[in-house]
Image 1 (cartoon, rainbow, N blue to C red):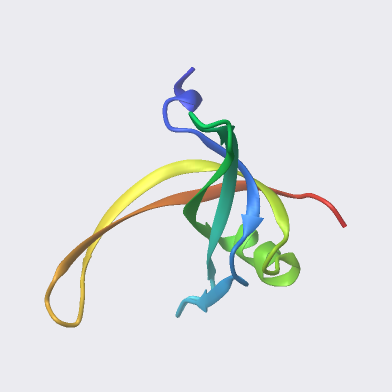
Image 2 (cartoon, rainbow, N blue to C red; image 1 turned 180 degrees about the horizontal axis):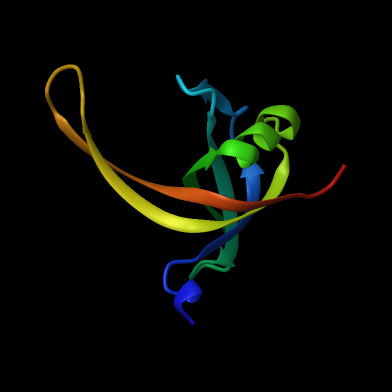
Length: 110
């Protein structure tokens, strides 16, 4: 049951090609965004689509898979865990970001 404490599953489309960063030790990091869409009818009966954007990070083998196979628009299933971190900009402003650390990746479609 502990594996269910922080688990995220998304099905969506890549909003950009993965950004690949190679670390000094040779390991790779992939960063990309996935959009999920939800449609519903509003009070006037009109169809409304709500798009949410999710920041994804993948390390090691998952980053290599992302580098070799993922492109903007590709439909994917992502499984991972929610991570939050803080960083400081060049101007000294503190920023916060929430990301999903990808543990599993499945490509859909062609």
